Image 1 (cartoon, rainbow, N blue to C red):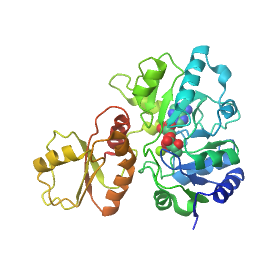
Image 2 (spheres, rainbow, N blue to C red):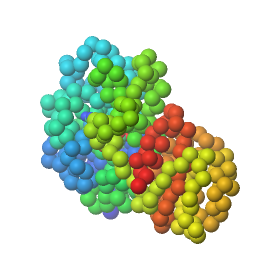
Image 3 (cartoon, rainbow, N blue to C red):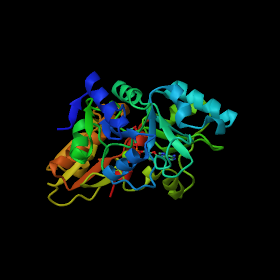
Length: 339
Ligand code: TXA
Ligand code: MG
């Protein structure tokens, strides 16, 4: 069994494994990561192999001290203005669920960044993660610790089920606090762009930088899909087929309904929707947050989708969250999980 609860000893063991080129799954405040030494190409290659991840999809490099930034990024290639923005963001949001795209340091192998000249850098807000990173090489490349395209893991058990013995060690630090991945932010261009909505809300970034932050370039999203391949459609997908609806919508439910699952945003809309849909014999239904709290809803999202999958449901009807704050990330993951 390769799962150990987080402790000084297990973290030390994990750091040793990473230093010798192995893979350690570890908790972060967003989701569990599959960590490898960010400077070791052989270890990075294993990450892609174990996840079944295409090589064109770059990894996030995790650090545990702001001083490490210059070892993983090339700050000399930043304009003064971008450097200012970087430090404002780092000061406000690190450690935390924000990955910032920066010119990469030449010491970071091309494999980590899928050949891009930039790297996504993040300083996670989780003590075990920080210790693991600090005790290994200071920079740990880690995608979410799930098979490529599948639901993200918010518990050690999800990692064990998804990747099992392919990982040298899984550190169990309990349920991830935030439950959706970090916001991926590109600050290099004229306009600041969110490449993936996540745990740091757009509004908070706009407030700190005093600019508006783009998400969509017009109607065609394909440019985004190239900018951040994790934004490929069909990603974060459960096994059951998932469709996403507004609370106003009447959906066409299969006759007997017995293999259907419902994922509601809050109790209020659940009650209204449930009456409208007359779906009393659903196999399973879940509410992301009874009181409609977006933070709570985000922390339950992947966990509830995992539970629904385990129930054997074949079809999931999910309700959109209000599209602001971390609700943007919830809706993004639901839409990309839709199939
Ligand atoms: O919260 C998180 O970010 C978690 C935890 C483990 O830290 N990690 C995570 O990693 O979600 P992953 O690999 O599942 O998603 C990384 C995302 C992908 O969408 C990837 O395309 C994008 O970041 N990305 C990484 N490097 C990039 C770069 N240089 N330019 C654009 N997008 C990049
Ligand atoms: Mg992922």
